[in-house]
Length: 322
Image (cartoon, rainbow, N blue to C red; front, side, top):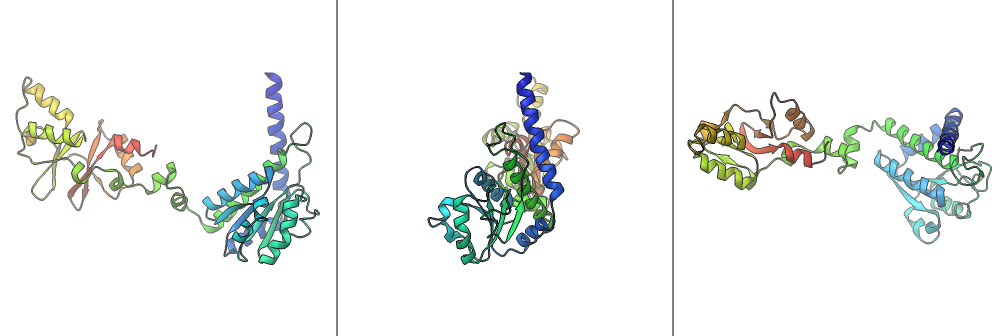
């Protein structure tokens, strides 16, 4: 067990040292690469093969999700038609540590004929592909973390770290905000927190339980049961909120009447309950539930003073905003 821990620590230390050394070497070439990406009228195309190809694929996803339009181009497939996806307005990031990957080297003349700029991410700037690239980012490392110095480990980690750094630098330069990030991640937790509103989650239309103050408690119970909402909003003729009757209120009314369900909605309702606006963000509404003076499971939703929905705590939780 101790030997395994020592091996893991050694690899992590060697790879982190590679990143630290790369950070120390960063120069104007890196700044130029970011400037090119910011000025790019097309897309940043990330191209590679093998382990470097996996890094390129992840880099393309990171660029795209942080405001830099990007896609992955498989180096082999590029030679069989996929090169048609590249235009003169694009920048192509080519990932090859050796700089001698045959598919990359042979791709260079075609990219030049397309008019696309090329940025080589390699550990050997003087390689065959390095001599043809428009810009080179040196990611050389002293050795791989692999004990045989063969398996791409430290080198791919450094490539990946540099790609993340380029994406973040471009992201910061663009002023890419959390709201922008949310637009690109609508299904993610952050996306839902920044875009989902009360109006998106609330019960409305036929699922909205409404009662008049003179409705019998039996009718109130039937309204709640039909909606499956846990409460009903008691409203006047103009649909303005007078109060709410919850399932708990009904149970207490039955206890008061020795097991009989007697009275009308106005007898059992909670007057002046809390409410939320339909335009409020869902995660802000969740905070209202959490900070309410006592435990509640539903809130009326108002718009222009009228009841337009009812918000259930269980529905908020199901959205995945927490």
